Image 1 (tube, rainbow, N blue to C red):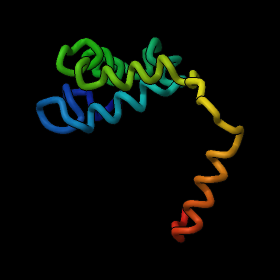
Image 2: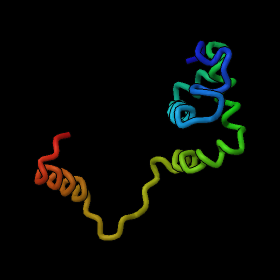
Image 3: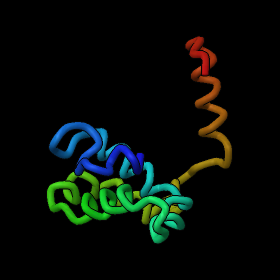
Image 4: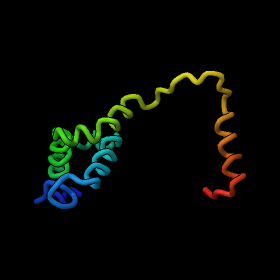
Length: 101
């Protein structure tokens, strides 16, 4: 990926595309990437990542995903919820409709 961006601003074409958004959010969610971004191992990928992060149009597109990462692991209180009941119900529902996972 770093080599691909050596002479490019975006992954696909000359403008921001869904490819850039998908790759950026994948890196954003990766703890390994956050450890690696400060190193010199990926200069072009780091440049691309930081460039997108500062684009106003990109900020609007990605803001929901960034917000969801900030609240990851925080679950709302579910009124009248019974522990494991939702999961059991979901599996039974899938089995009843012969959906193979």
